Amino acid sequence: MNKSIARIAVLVSGGGTNLQALIDAQNSGIIHSGKIELVLSNNPNAYALERAKNAGISAVCVSKKVCGSQEVFEEKLKAVLKEYEIDLIVLAGFMSILSESFIKEYPKRIINVHPSLIPSFCGKGFYGLYVHEAALKYGVKVTGATVHFVNEVPDGGEIIMQKAVNIRENDTPETLQKRVMKLAEWKILPAATEKVCQQIINGEKE
Amino acid sequence: MNKSIARIAVLVSGGGTNLQALIDAQNSGIIHSGKIELVLSNNPNAYALERAKNAGISAVCVSKKVCGSQEVFEEKLKAVLKEYEIDLIVLAGFMSILSESFIKEYPKRIINVHPSLIPSFCGKGFYGLYVHEAALKYGVKVTGATVHFVNEVPDGGEIIMQKAVNIRENDTPETLQKRVMKLAEWKILPAATEKVCQQIINGEKE
Image 1 (cartoon, rainbow over the protein chains, first blue to last red):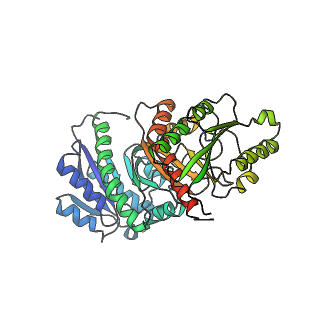
Image 2: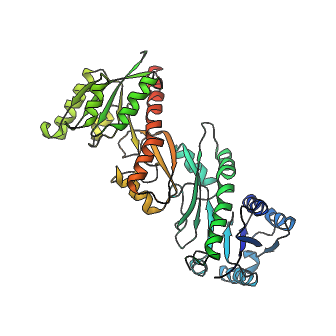
Image 3: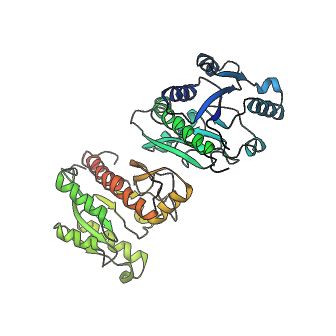
C-alpha cells in the first residue's frame, strides 16, 4: 500500500471510553499515521456514537437484531467498511463476536484491546469485568492490558503491546477495571494503533 | 508462634545470586523480621555455598546422589532443618524436586521465586531459561517474576508478590533472564521473605 495516512474504523458497543482515548490521541498527535474515519456500533444506544458525532466523525449503527442473522450483519459491516475505504479496524469494547470468515478477510487489519496480560486470563469467556474477577480470584498481584492482532483464535493473535498494572489489596473487579483502563488500555490502544498505521502506510507485512 | 525473629533456610543449587540478594537485604535491613541461619545445597559445587561462608552463614550440602533415594534425601533435609530450628524455607534456585509429602509438612513455610508472571509460563517443564524462551516465543511484551508459597501443585501456591519487567525487541532468553533477575527477582524475593517472616512472628495463618 502506498498511502500517506491509514483510514481507521473503530468498532464499539458501549460508552466508548477507549474510543475517546483514540480521539484524544488523534487530537494530540500521538496518532498521526492514521485517521479515524468511521465509528461503527452494533448498539444504537451506545454513547460512543455521541462521542463520534461530537468529534465530527461519521457514526454508523449496524444492528445484528435488525439484520436478523450473523451473515447479514457481517455483510452489512463489510459494506460499510468498504464504503469508507477502511485500512484498519480497531475493536474498542465491541461486544459482538465476529466470525472466522469475517476475520480472515482482514489479516493483520483488525486489532483488539484485552484487559489482561495475555496469556493470563484470556480466551473464551474472559471479557469485561469477568477478566478482573478472575485475576483477583487467582490472587495475582500484577495484571494489565494487551493490544493484539485479531485472528481466528480468541485472544490468540500476535501481541502488539502490553502494559502492566499493579493490583492493590482492596481492589474490587470494578476498581481494578477502572485502573487498568486508565493506566493501560487508554495508553497502549492509541500507541499500538499508531504503530500498526505506520506499518500499513509503509507497506509492511502485506 | 511467639518469636522475635524467624529463622530462615535458603535452599540453593547453583551460583546463588538470589541468595546474595537475600544476604544483601539482611545487611541493609530490608529483611529484619528474619535471619538467614542456614544455606542448604543439593550440589556440593554450588558457588552459593561460598557466598554463605563469606557471609558467616552455616552452609550444608545434602547430595541426593550420596543419599541414594528421594526418601533418604528428604529425611536428611528435614533433619538439618530441624537441627537449625528453621521457620521458613526459601527456595532460591533450588533445582531438585521436593515430594508432596515433604511439602505438606511445611504448610505456608516454603516460598519460591519463579521467573514469570504466574499464571503465565509456569507449571511443569517451566524452569530456568525455558521460561524466558517460552515468553519470547509467545511474543509477550511484559513478563516478570513471582514469589509464591509452595504447595503440592507446581507453581500453584498462593502468590505473595509479583513484579513486571518489559521485554525489549532484541531480547534473547539470556538477556531477559538477567534483566528479570535484576529488576524483579532480586527485589521481590527479599521483600516477600520479610513479609512472610512478619506473618510468622505475628503468628498469622498458623
